[in-house]
Length: 88
Image 1 (cartoon, rainbow, N blue to C red):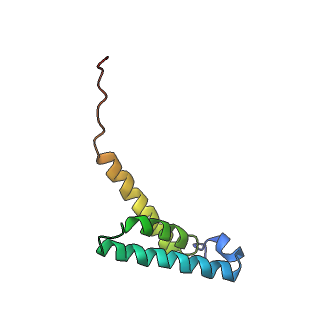
Image 2: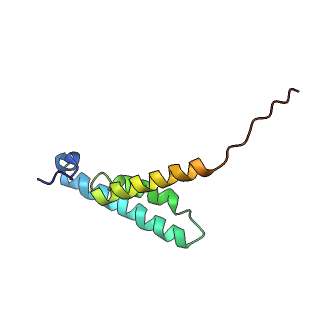
Image 3: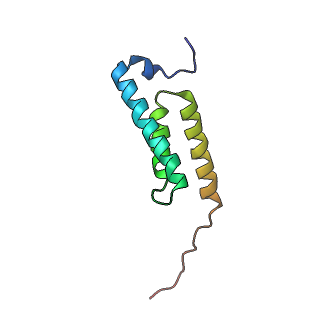
C-alpha cells in the first residue's frame, strides 16, 4: 500500500466516498466560479470543498495546508490596532 494514502479513506463505504467526492467537487467548482463572478465569494466555497476532498485525496490536503499557511502569513502581516489608555 502507498504510505501517502489516508487510512480512513480505505475503511469508508464506497457510497460515502463517492458522496464526499461529489460534494467537495461541487463546492470547489462553485468556488472557482465564484472567483470569476461578483455574486458569490469564491473562497467561502473553495476552503470547505478542499477540506472535504482532503479526506479522500492527498493533493487536496496539501493544497488546503498551503492555503492555511498563506492565510497565517497574511494574518501576521496585518497590523493590529493599538489599545488606547484613555479613561472616561
